[in-house]
Length: 54
Image (cartoon, rainbow, N blue to C red):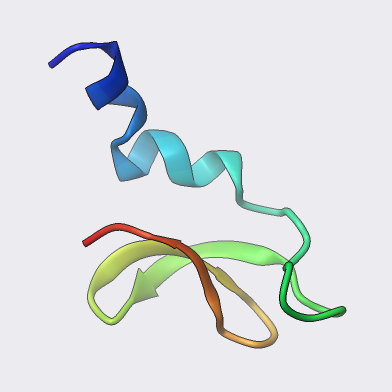
């Protein structure tokens, strides 16, 4: 795979967003976890997925 394919892999992309503030609530911070069986970055307060891989 080329360079673009490497960046789009969950283990490379999701850590870049971990620890950021949630865009949907005032209290949350983004954490890596599974969301409905897929790798994702989810708010630890409101549980809204910010990035999800299918």
